[in-house]
Image (cartoon, rainbow over all chains, first blue to last red; front, side, top):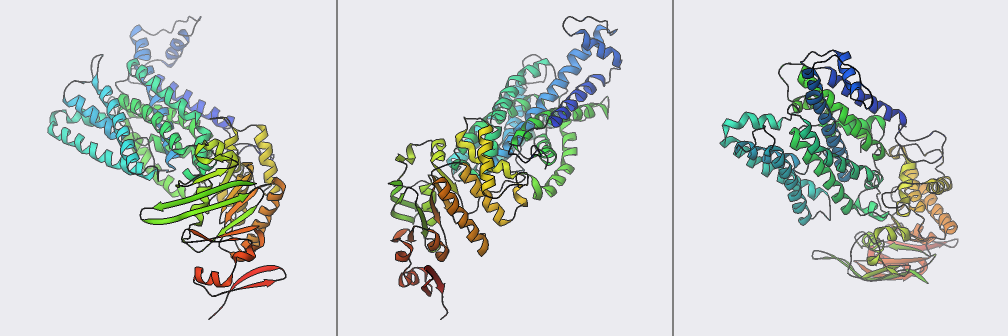
Length: 355
Length: 256
């Protein structure tokens, strides 16, 4: 059985195999390399590699790149690659944790209204003209971030007051209600302001093309915090797979665990969404692929989701900016294009071993 | 000495009374079976006694009021196996049984060598050796039932609550499961409180039986005292005869 431990017969817990970690690292390194080497500006591969080596401490080599070309690497390609990795890792690990706390394979990080709240926040910022996507202070990410968190808080409040003690399903239903409501408002505002409809639409489809180090530094603390909290709960989330009553009978507090993990995942998701727009499916397809291939324990699913989520989004972004170059295909379109067929496969297989 | 005392347990769901002023005391080392017709409140009572459902009465285990205990401390005193335990998809037998060690780990901690040792012992004892890496879904009903028991036993608690532990099993496996509980009870000095439908089997294994009907205790005592045919006929709305065959009490349905 994959990921089930040694074959000696002795009892051990399911753990992450070194071969999977190596594969994950390999995927990340190759995605970073491809992201740095490929782009519309035709840079020599050797030059890019030498330029990177030059930045290592105590090493000085001449890359032969002009300062403009060096800038393309450091200010255009690298921040975009790093941002893709952070967004991918955060969305994937958040999705995996949502699936764990709700024991629902269809749960994704937008389930409790994150996306709808962020969409409304971004639309308001764009329509009022306070966020034009330019300048150092852009209100689009700020309002998207706040909208996303407010939506999840509203969902939690509504779900809690309407019987979440009895069943976490109340929370999911509250999420559906909040998301529909906020989407209705967002659509109304968008329709009333047709002149900005393209901007809003482009934001909703998700993109990394405005990536700079500003976005990276905005997202990093939240991504780290969310990932840390979720990873610390890896065993507890396996206990949650027993359902609330049995999890409680072995000594954990399911309500509290759910609140902590949802808070962490929502914070990470809100930050990711605020800088990248609504990138769909990463939070579902990455954790499920990991589960199908490497094992269902959260000790395996959570760290591998981060690694493959990061590399997946870097590769998808590369596709998005190269296949129709110089035009860019929104990253959300490509993740959904790959995600939807995959989803069918996941659903067909979920009778067997998804959890 | 009573290890578990439930006093004046009332449970209401809206206008419906599920349990009405139920009091039970269980002595250390005892095997008590709660019986009664469908809807009598057996499972609710068990889950209240296990600290998993709220009620207006008090439940104390080993001298501690359950309300005052954190879930972790409670889980070190009592283990609980519901009627239909969850079977997490893709989870291995080893991982599943190891979950029973949760209350003995530090907060957010993971298992250590001592936990692996304990679980290994339980696995050998419950004849699950060689099943460790199988997934739960690949097991038969009887094997799965042993896994649920194994998880409860690896929790190493003085008292174990079992809700209908034999429902999904055929006659032979029912006896095997109950024999196993009997054996584990002796080896680990565990107090067992369970609910059961089969009155004959219940009488053969229990020290004491508690008969519930409509949320009230209507009879309590040794199997011979509780299994009164007239009483059972009225409560269950059934035609039954209680026989004694070679020292065993047997409750049999009879035709008109």
